[in-house]
Picture 1 (spheres, rainbow, N blue to C red):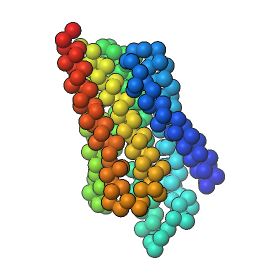
Picture 2 (picture 1 turned 120 degrees about the vertical axis):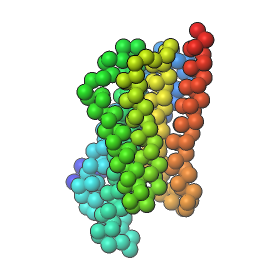
Picture 3 (picture 1 turned 90 degrees about the horizontal axis):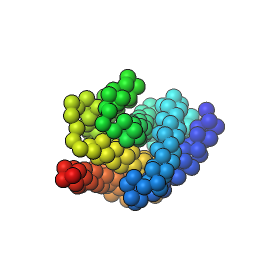
Picture 4 (picture 1 turned 90 degrees about the vertical axis):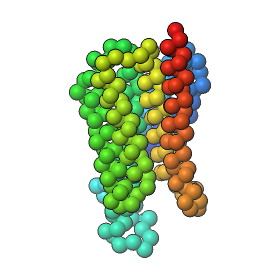
Length: 242
């Protein structure tokens, strides 16, 4: 179990590092340019691997929390340590699902454009429904066990999932609304990736920051939400004027 965990974790770190860098290439290139399209596909494919390996890691931890993280115990009973590890694994599992759903939705929206009937496939609706239901469940866990990150991202994930579902079923959409939806979904995937990096990859560095570490962990979500709102408004006005 530990060997499998180590191998998958190493792969996850490598593809995750690549994804964090690739995110910015299509972001800074002109929308619709060859570089934007090409590196956008590279980013999406890399993020699929990140999400898949992340979910596998979390499942392994949920199955054998103490066997994998037993050395991290510090004055905790085995039961409490097992609970804490599993709660954190569930949080990261949800982030992986959020990343997968966002990338999948963003790429599919771009492919179908105005023909949104293709967004109503059973597989895609199930993906988004689980994101929404999972967000409500994560929020409930956060309230029950007093976990602030679970509460924040439970709310965020529920909103993102429900908005994507509404887009799939909306009777009419505005001019080039699919582009705005694509933009928001891809930025949303970046929020998931950078949050996972800070909460898992950089938590040892941020541990000394005390309560400030919470700010760093939620900062990608806050910044991403502001950017999505600003760009959505900007492009809505631009497309309406055409």
